[in-house]
Image (cartoon, rainbow, N blue to C red; front, side, top):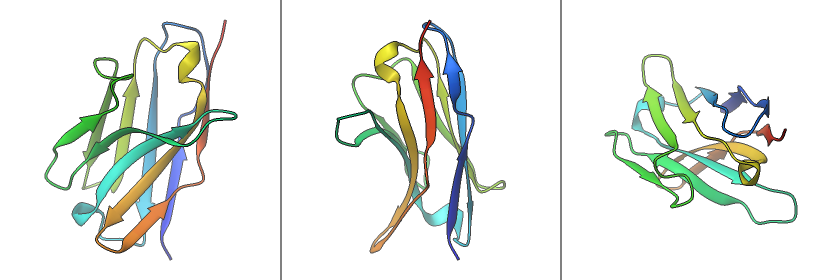
Length: 115
C-alpha cells in the first residue's frame, strides 16, 4: 500500500520559517519525481516545487528564492524548506509522487502564516 505522509505544518508568524517533510512508503522512492503543491481556501491546488529523481528542481515564481525542495532517497523523504513566509503562503500543502502512469498524493498538512 502506497502512503505519503506529510508533517511539519503549523502556525508561523510572517517572516518565519517552516520545514515540511513527506515520508513515502510502498514505492521505490528513488525512481519517482516528487512535488509539493498547495491549496488555499477557495482556490485551486497549485504547484509549489518539484524535484526529479535526478535532483533537478522547479519552483513556482511566487516561492523562488524563499522555498527549497530536497530529497533524501535513503530516508524515502522529500522536504520543503520554507523561509520568509507570508500570509499568502497560508494553505494546505500536499506531497505528490509521480512516475509514468502512477500518481500518488498525501493527505496534506496545514500551514498558516499569521501574526
